[in-house]
Length: 155
Image 1 (cartoon, helix red, strand yellow):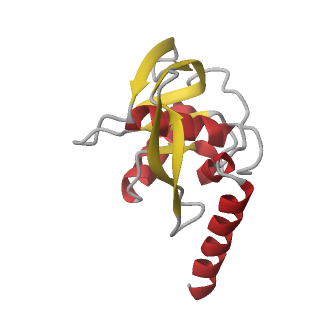
Image 2 (cartoon, rainbow, N blue to C red):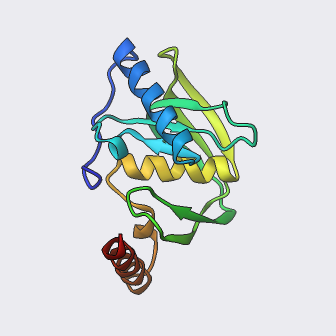
C-alpha cells in the first residue's frame, strides 16, 4: 500500500474525521511530526502534520497538493515508522504553498515553512506512493535499506 497512490477524498465526513483522529493519536504515540493515511493502512489521500513545539496544533488535510515551492532548499533528517531505526538527510524546498481540503471540508491554500514544509512534503510523497529515501542516490538508498533490514533482523 505504501507504493500505491492514495485515492482522492470526495468530502470530509464523520468517517474522515475519525480517521484523522486515529492518525493524530498514532503520530503523537510515535512521536512524529506527520502521518499519511497510507501509513496506517488507509488508502485515502489524508494527512496530518504537527511540527509545533507545544504539540496539539495538528493540521488535518485531505487531497493535499503543492501549488508553489520555494527555490531555497533546506535539509532535514527524515525517517518513517515504516522503516524503523534509519533516517537520512533529505533536501526539500524550504517553503511550500499547499492546497488541501481542511477539517471543515473547505479548500484552503496555506504556506508552510521549515520543518512544517518538510513534513507536509514528506506526507504528500507518501500519498503519491513515494518514500523519503526515493530522494537519495541509488547507492545511498541501497545502503539505507540494507541497514534497515539488518536492524529488522536483530528484532
